[in-house]
Image (cartoon, rainbow, N blue to C red):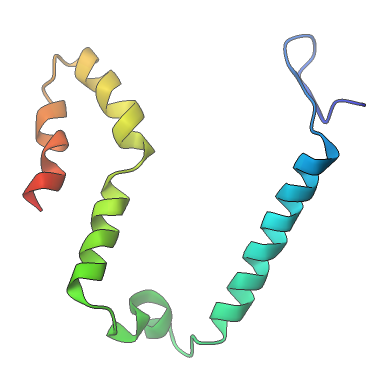
Length: 98
């Protein structure tokens, strides 16, 4: 099996055909889902604010989910170590204050 990505002698990554098949199935599925749901959008307001039909708690959960991202788990601890916890504590409790 030939390497799909070759970084010289440092790293060689091999993908099995099932990995490629799953990746392609995912990409095709996402494209089809985008086409299906785009039929319901008739204006930019439909796209950006969902025709203003969402309840407040749904938007709140979306905001909390957005603020708790991979940056929360990776960058904040590193920054806390670097800055002696100066920025970590306010950002850590930001979600509790919402």
